Length: 322
Image (cartoon, rainbow, N blue to C red; front, side, top):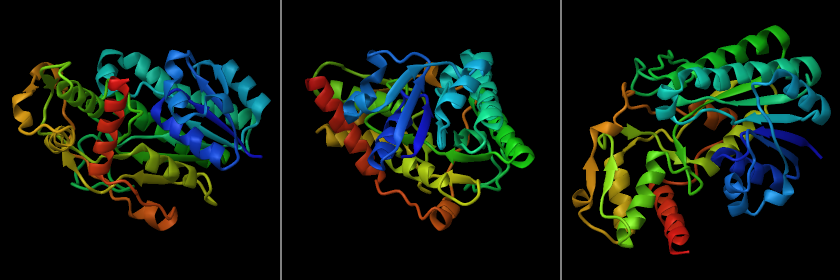
């Protein structure tokens, strides 16, 4: 039985990854900064909480990580632990760098020191590109991050490459474009929209305040993306991959699909564009070229954008009616 260690176990990607690995017969160890009953709701929704060896821990604690890797000796490690909300990264830039960059350094050191055979997946981000010089990005596109989150992920990526080349650590990085699901946190605009749409349809809420509704993203389904992440660690050699759909949609598109699915036309009368939610620096529209992932990983997304949005609306409708 293969053993997998997952950091950030209470998050969206970790929940779907845990389900995937358990279905493949892995023994899964999950670590979070604070694994409380309230934070385990995603694992509960997938019905897998009792199948995971859960514990609380801090990836910025070097001695803790060395002991953890020494004890478990995992075949694979998936690092989803991060300050991942971009808005928060502006307010807590130092903490973001400490967790997202220094934490990765500590993981690499632990693997190099006591668990050299462990294969590491690092969750990178399209925000590493920030404001690129191309409309569509691939693995060779120059990174130009425009927020503390993107900077922290780029620094972690550079550390991965150094440890891969200098010490032979099997470390793979994904430039993950926006990926959502019914398990997405409420602080993200996609979930804020689907939850707000349902509340409006049920008469609980009268309006929805958003930032720049003209911005566009390459949105995919997290359940699809974890399949690519797993495939990255099954390759003969570690490498870096764009994980994206290759299509962009605007927040207006998202609003149209969500409101229509909830039975509401003319969404404009319910939505207020509030400059208080605008970012200090808005990244360019990012769209990923997933050709390499298709060829080498034999991967492609199976959920359409419309299916993703409808799934999220349906899930919020079930939760709020309950």
